[in-house]
Length: 170
Image (cartoon, rainbow, N blue to C red; front, side):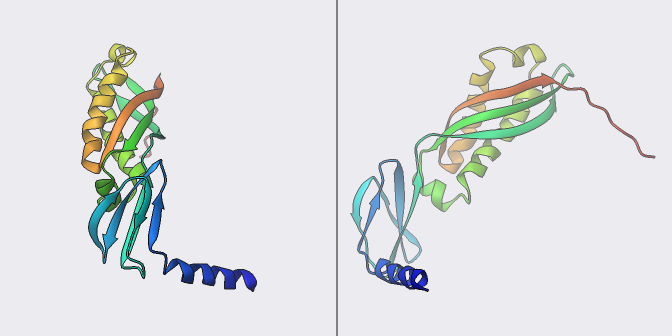
């Protein structure tokens, strides 16, 4: 009973707060009646209370995302399974918060296709070279910019030849 009363009181008080604090690892965007007004760096910022200004903040430090396994065919006809790890960060807070539903999903979208294309256009020997991750990073980075995301590094966490067995039910 009292916990609901306290929650209600805190929400009511929050309605009147004329400032917001953006942490050192965040950046934010101020929306006034749903329209972008400005971007916020870390620190204390004054806003118009009563839900006139609304602040959307997100973490902009590097994050790692594990990509699930993909089974692909290389240029020389070998069937391989690859999985990747992506290190990325938000570089444009406005794009990442206002034009993308979920930043992690946007990173995955940027990388799955680029990795698939890079693996399909390479041979098995090229995939095993150390500098192949540099090629992957460049390919994924180009895709990430349109979402306001800087893809810093892409690595293959798994790379193996795969035997494919197809069953035919006829």
